[in-house]
Image 1 (cartoon, rainbow, N blue to C red):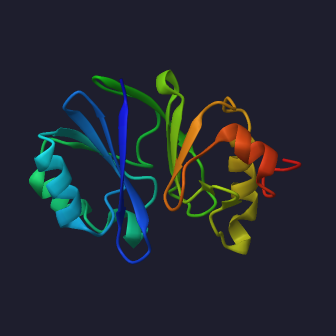
Image 2 (tube, helix red, strand yellow):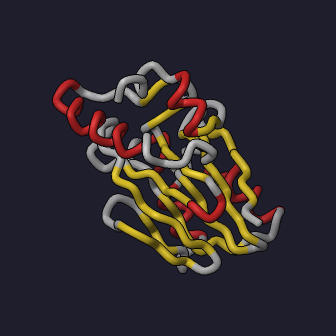
Length: 176
């Protein structure tokens, strides 16, 4: 069973996710509150095997260097990786979701109907983007609409949602 804990970090209230199956653990977007993240991992006796980065804005990677120092065997996974990733017991897909940044990716755990979108899609909106990245954002949104509606969306800020709710209610996804 996939367990997901959200730790809200820093003054921008970034969602850092601790994703585990048993004690094997992935950190998704280690924001800028190192001690909160480390305390949670140590208190729960978790074994960090991977660190996933949706994009490299400071509020999503503020604790990255410390996490790499504390967990040197953890594999760093970001936009430089692509396709299907296997970090047993985890299997997930990396989906390019450029627009908010040109290094944005989402991590899709299709076996569990879960996607981590970083600042690409939020509940009711999308991440900001520069005018010259509009085509990339639209291309990414078109990919998003093909993800099954029952998939839970865990964004980089704010509350979780589902693909279905966003396709129905998010004004940026209407007509895509």
